[in-house]
Amino acid sequence: MLARFYSNVDTWNMSLKRMATLAAALVLVVAAAASCKSEEDEDWLGLLLSSSGVTDNYNGTVNQVIGTGTFSWMKCTQGQAWNAALNNCAGTGSGTVYGATSLAFCTVITGGASYCTTNEGVANSGPAYDSCSNLVFAGQSDWRLPTQGELASLAAFSSRSALLYTFPQTPDDKYFWTGSANTTDTDGTSAWSISFAENTFGDQLAAEKDTPRYVRCIRP
Image 1: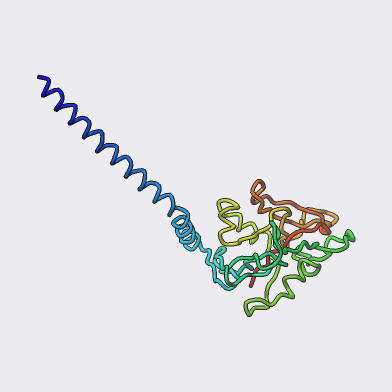
Image 2: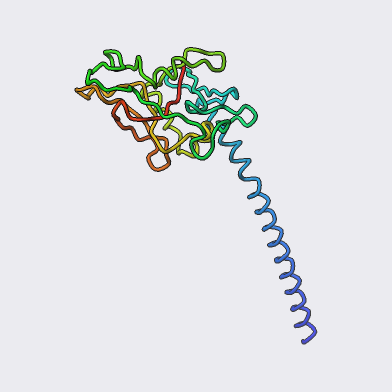
């Protein structure tokens, strides 16, 4: 009887050792998977963005399908320098701004409803407008301020972190100008801007036209 008891004890011990070995192996497998997670996530995120109509051209521009058209965005905020080696916007400056320039929609507000815009409320002059219309980049010279709807389409990204995958070093301390005036503003002193900060991602705000804001250009 005792011999059988000790035999069973040995069997249990062997089973426990096997279970411990399997558990240790499982821990190693999980750890290995975790170490690869970030790279795999980036690959999947890139595929997801591509299938959603967003394509990185790896030349400082990003294509996006908006409605029935394909448009090109500047990868970097105005004032930043595209770093071709890293395909990011950390070429100039540091911190969260990396050289991004703050510009006014209009330097002076006169109260005229069409100041710095056409009668339809589309920008046609001013520092923000000029920064895009005078831009020559990636062999193209027809850059412009995005409309309110076009810039808002970038908020279709699920979050700021998803946006930063394609538009790295996007500053978050100020809103970005659109080229659309606030046509409900009877004195014509405001235009629409959009936030890409974490806590206000996608928020739209009609700001006074002489307020400093960031600019991201689009074409055609």
